[in-house]
Image 1 (cartoon, rainbow, N blue to C red):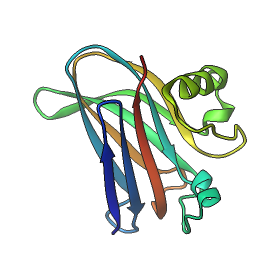
Image 2 (image 1 turned 180 degrees about the vertical axis):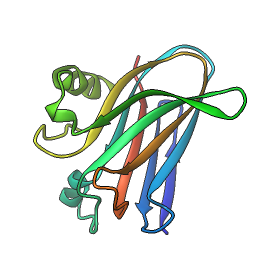
Image 3 (image 1 turned 120 degrees about the vertical axis):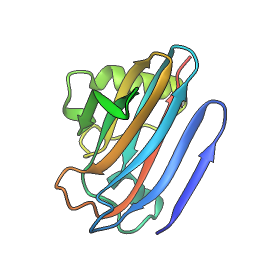
Length: 143
């Protein structure tokens, strides 16, 4: 499995290959020290335009807050960002964060969040449950 992490103080990017069988989802953990607005994106189809082969055709993402005792609280989920009522806001926040624009007609997942201090897990999977293909998980700090 190919995996590459790129991190700065402003953003985190995970370049992952979702395999079949047990790796139908991938998790990226975050720890927030202070309240932060952010943008989460999970990209598949758009990557083909950059020459990436074998991308996940319809990625989705889910955000959980880790709570004491090992449980996780569902915070939000997103699939097909351009179909949602917040598509305009998401596009504007992406531009503010310096993220490249997405076609509203594609099947990418993007979510604008305001995170309180604590531990979080971003789970990426495919909408059809196959879990196959290459994805890029992006996490942007928005100031």
